Image (cartoon, rainbow, N blue to C red; front, side):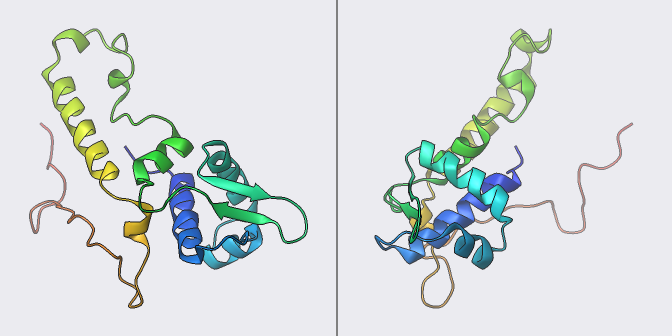
Amino acid sequence: MILSRSADYALRALIYLAQASGEQPVPLERIASEQRIPAALLSKILQALVKAEVLRSHRGYGGGFVLVADPAALTIDVVIQAIDGPFTVFECMEDEHFCHLCSSCKLRTKLFELQAAMIGVLRGVTIADCVPDATGAPRRPLPTVVGPEPGRRGLGPIG
């Protein structure tokens, strides 16, 4: 699963709105400018979050967007799924008819485990966790990302 640019922008906008944490609407142009997000794309993203009942929009003079979901309860998996749809690591996980090997595939079983672990991590992080404190650091340490062994890139040559 690769996080889409739209999901990234949605998360950045929500973190920004959580920092604003007021009842006053924040104009789209201000969010776009502060977060360096194209306004036209941000408009579509924020409307999707309104539809998901994460935000409320106000039209007209003084209009903008207000975060209505509690940032301490809003997990990033909800945001990503509102923008990108359901999580899938590989196509065969959505459709068992994708491949004739699905019914006996051990790799598919491992991919389901990977997907469950990823969703578990995303459900464990809220928007409030990502809001920086006065020093600019996230309020809660984010999980450590484990990469390849030092000096090793990828899996190596095949064959």
